[in-house]
Image (cartoon, rainbow, N blue to C red):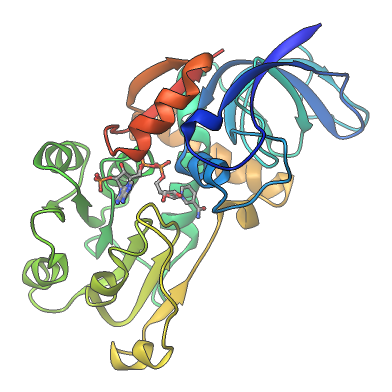
Length: 329
Ligand SMILES: NC(=O)c1ccc[n+]([C@@H]2O[C@H](COP(=O)([O-])OP(=O)(O)OC[C@H]3O[C@@H](n4cnc5c(N)ncnc54)[C@H](OP(=O)(O)O)[C@@H]3O)[C@@H](O)[C@H]2O)c1
């Protein structure tokens, strides 16, 4: 049976996203066939589309989805046909009505979590899980500690605001408008800085922390915020550079890290963390628990038809979205 998927023939703008007919076969060993009910929209999809993260062409897009398992291949024991399931996973291909993919990162979805919620939270929520729980400064993070989280009203950002609050952390969020700042505060940030108006956000962070600075900066904005982020850190602080929505971080003079107070820098990716099924399940269980108990709620700001993926990309890149968005096949 013919299915639909979004593909790109060449890297470029949103106009490269084309809905085409594709064949989806039976799952091989270690694979699962899943029929999507919703797919997540993520900034990494933009990097894949525009060639910042090159893919072999032609390429499918999308790293996050939820749906019903239709078939499992040999050796897959944690899923069976008919299961509700959700994932964040390589390789791209979630922008589709159905797909065959490695079963390793596909998790059985608790009944308490709706399909569209799952599609909106797997990649973003697992990212927040590893950032706040597994990417820590040398003395760890304790209740009361300050952290900075950029783009705090975005998909990853609104989850981070709530999760940080649940951990007792004082999250200082940044965002690109006063409305977005208010949204971050409503979701648990203790302070919010509009970094398009207050470009010296580091000075504000110093004021808020009595001059001390913060233990960790979680920075997915990249080029525009790198320098200011370093200036937010307390001695021995940790700079977590996990994305580049404004462009890649420029080459770094390593001596800067000494001058800023013996600081640490890491550039993590979710896919290192979810390299094994066991760790993926443990991280997923943590996320499911946070959502099922209401400590983290997933805001779906926009729902697009799969065929309108190009418009979804335009809106995401124009900074018009808050929270998560999903594509509906
Ligand atoms: N390394 C990892 O494991 C990992 C995993 C997931 C996500 N990420 C990264 O985390 C970030 C957030 O992902 P997301 O999917 O939740 O996206 P998002 O935060 O919903 O959207 C990106 C946000 O970045 C901000 N931004 C700042 N400068 C920008 C610019 N020049 N152009 C476009 N946006 C700009 C915008 O918020 P304001 O208007 O408020 O500034 C925008 O809403 C992305 O950079 C993504 O690549 C990394």
